[in-house]
Image (cartoon, rainbow, N blue to C red):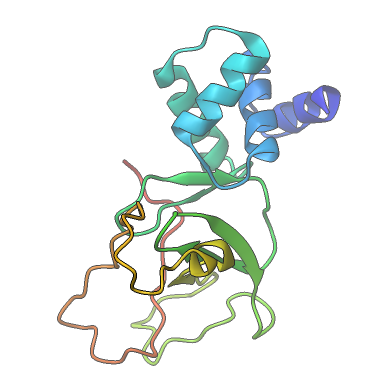
Length: 176
């Protein structure tokens, strides 16, 4: 993979570094991982790397379109290498697990807003929230158990959220 990854970096005008190669490999190995997850994987691979170096590498790779940055409401950004296709995400409200789901409506953008406000729309980001099968299986039968859950906040509602069937779009170039 490293030779292909090195060529990929060069084709996108990026200097090939051990850190960037390791970050690309980590994102591939741990889809939907946070920057901290990526840092842990990179450290296991190449040793010492600062948290800032991981954040910098992820930012450059996302800006060049080599990784995808996803930031669900109330959650840290996550990164994946599945690019250039039309897919969305399912997130468990209990454990935070995220999985890919293909769009049922076809080619990107798979959704058309009621009013595009003059925008040329080329992408729609959909995040489905619910509970994964494993968390559903652990739901106590109201027996008073002390099951621990990770609270995953709901997306904040705005005054424009009148139509619950309307999907929100997300600008993938969101900067920190």
